[in-house]
Length: 440
Image (tube, rainbow, N blue to C red; front, side):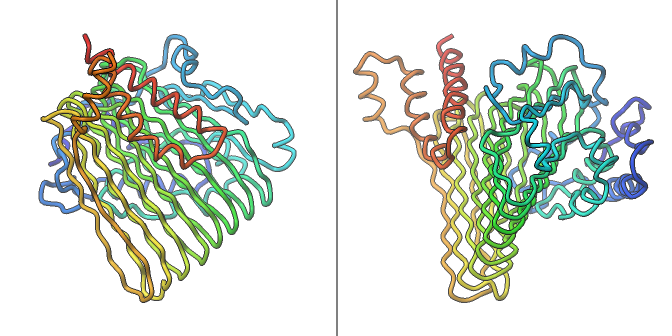
């Protein structure tokens, strides 16, 4: 598949004009990325890294650079905003709306919480070291190059050595306009023995508009640090998104990455965790609640490069209507990475005879004395369980929502306060909305 876009206002034409501001290394990076994008082929049906994917969704012909945002931003953020974050940044169509650090003492401790634009101006050396330093390895090399070439907006969070922050930082990416394209970027650097939590929202203003998001996360954990990263994706029902996540975990550091996906027509999430030194741990979690004809395409790599490292993946999918998921995950134990402890579990709950789940877990072990397990299960609601709830006067849609909530709790309960109650409430809202839709 190739793109034939020639419209000068198209997304392809737009990225042919690199950024006019910023350091020389970043401009050169964008020029090189454009050449890489043009040289890389689009995914094809026979590509193993796109197996089972709906390749037809990948055309870029219908998307344009996002226009100016109009309307009230607060109406989109108020219902899901965290009550007392450490700081909050809001983007609307890749344009900065607001950036606030609520605790002034954090800046005094050296915490950097700013936009990518300001980061390139004031912290260029830091960004040059960490910005997209890890290659895309799971099939989306072309889209990672597109992101790099088209990027105009993003955030940078750097937490200094020994600083622990209990309240989460929060970022909103809002999209408005039929056919709008955005390229959100997040760079988080947790320095030695620091601790931080990050909450990121992806929201469409109109529930029916088409749109395209091509995002990248760089999560860098230095020795002894702890990072909890949570994303909530609520794109419109006709949205296409590709998200490439890279997590690098150093000695005795602990990463937790939770993706909650509720929206979109086609959503691809590629997540790579690299355990770089002994004691490194990565927890890879995801919840997908699919309805209508949504497709969630998930590709993961747990890469153990050194001895005595741990990874634990738990993905759960609840699928209504004609929703479908693809999961392809690999635990790779590199030569010499002895005493690796790695888990991978995918569980699919089908709530419709037309829902579909495809799971392909895998192992590649090149070291001795390891403990690695993987597995995938797919099933329907137990008839006895549903009958019990119905016999108590609960309607079928609400009964299914209760069962799904219990099914998903195992994932959310792995987090600590203050996010635990907040995330349970967000899932409850999604299930309640789906239950009401089923009754209409």
